[in-house]
Length: 496
Image 1 (cartoon, rainbow, N blue to C red):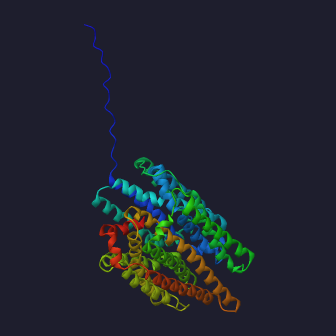
Image 2: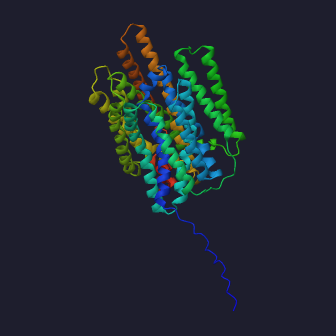
Image 3: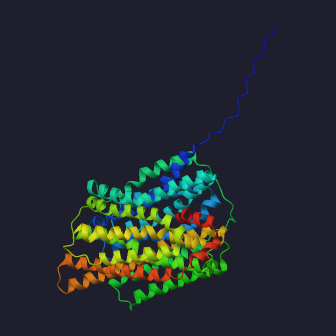
């Protein structure tokens, strides 16, 4: 009997291993944490950066603003790219660009080099931040699971600011300011590898159009406007230099509006949204609100280190209670908005902030930390926590349900834009005040303190203007027509 031929038994088809939801959530939250962390971690390192790279007093704000401007200008475009190319590919690209820019920034040898690296970091953040939310929304589809995931994502986003000020102080004091940028490299490398291995390449329906021209014109216009404002410390308002950049800003911003109104097939910011009174008033409030709060962390950090000679770690620990105040205020406002409506909560929270900024404007060389910084800082941070959710709720309630996400993105962009312009204005005013006193023969330290006081006082004026803008919001009864589900969904979407 011939031997029986034994053939190879076909191997079963490989089973696709299901990636645990907790791992996907961890990757998405860490990506968002990187983006948020990099705003606050730099603030406490600003005096060291100024000393080592020889930034001018007015030019130092570009360390913050270069990041914020590109982040704001490309944020909405970043969300569209994730829809078009897939979440995994865009996540890996965003993390890689962010990490590479951080590496270059850490090796910077001049103000121009660091400013350029920070601008590229902002671009990477604008690509990365929206896709972290896309990953969560496509992974967690059930209501309760999605709510818990969004809660974790929002908590990480909120906590990044508090961790950043302490971590920035530790790194700057124990190593150097360069490590507030280098720290992103190992985190980004690990995240990129994890994303490439575990994330699925999910795409959402899109028309395939990207409004690149819109993103470039608005970013260029805002950069020209900020540069014109900052340059007034050496070039008068009526000089050809200042007027030239103001004209360039007007042309670019005007071009952006024309692109959105007539030419873009998928506009970043559809102007029809602003037919809504609620959305328009919420964005105006957010613009002024952001202008004050971005500058607060900037000037408080400089005051503590320049006037009271705190090292970076002590300054970070001194600012940390304010981050906790924001979290407490946010928890309170979740309960207040459904009961009193976003307009009434804003009209309470904004004046609280204005009083806090006025209190900060009374700082002097001899002011104590508790009475001069911590007291008003807690008041401002509680007010900040009280205001974020009502602004987002008012904006999203003012549009159709299927455009609530877009409205959230627009109001978030307004906060970034307001912050960049506000910081430029306030830094210029503070420098002008300090320079005038130095020329008059005053000692440097009191002159710097007086400059910071002027910035805080004008910030209080921004908040008063924001309060007036908030009075234009519809009443709670008008907003109620949008439906309770949309009102509950707005805070989570606003974080997007």
